[in-house]
Length: 416
Image (cartoon, rainbow, N blue to C red; front, side):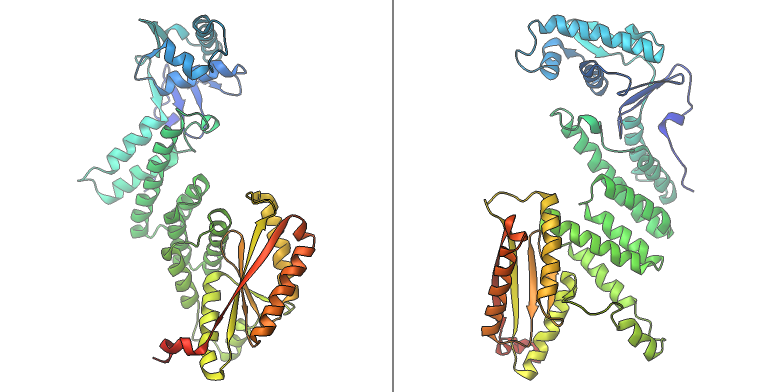
């Protein structure tokens, strides 16, 4: 039985500070809250942030000055730091109704957070739950509960408003990696329990944290398949494919692709009447342009055409269109997506209904032209490139094309 967990409900004792660092930075004490919204002085908040995170050590004045100010930003940094610490103590006292002198201590030329003040940190509980879950002798059901508690505590990345700071970045990466491992381990245990709804919850939240960790997409698609949500699974696969093409210029992993193929195979119902199957196979919309598909489907169509070429003696032609900026710089994402949307519309209106087009990489399209001669293919590709480059699209980017033919004689392996 998985339990809802909020670190601030761990007894909710009077006189205890509850400090959240994951997803946001805030402090609660006896129903009082101190957050970034209440502290308008940025450097006061920065000092509190650093002392809290580095609470297990004393920080010298020189280190704090280096963290808080750029070189020569203030004339008297030591005095500026002293004033900043004074303002921080007042901020704590005002917002939390707490004796701030007990929280921020100064000794031997260093400032530090007083570790003797009773505190509950979400990051500490997060790590404690993981340690409990990973004990060798623990039962799987109990390990699952601990992983789920750790999952719930992770409200978001470590100090997200300060992730640009050099001293924050490695800590944020550390906790994010730990969180992704929690999600992976948790899903493994939930798969054994067939708790697919919770797996979907876990994966979708993990994907919002980092959409490029593929295991979360794999587990989400598995959960959708297990609950007979094939349409959602296919839609998610297409979404992932487009994202990886757009942002990374690569295809999804073999694990994700295999799941997609399994969806297609398992979606056939052989008890249907042949007329129903025919209607299911037919295109639902009017056929007004070129066939668009994802790259996996493009490969299947390509191989089918290659096999057919053995019998009819005709060649098929593959064309690659690449989008580049006119000055050689990287095309901004917002401009690129608008350009590619316009480009695909142009391709579908220009090419024939029996041609095929797919997105390939971040800035490329693959075309399959069949039942056409080499000379006509060259003419079609040249006219298409010229048309695009002379259009409104060509004012922003430049398109160039490459072409290859596959001769049936090279396809001898298909005879086996």
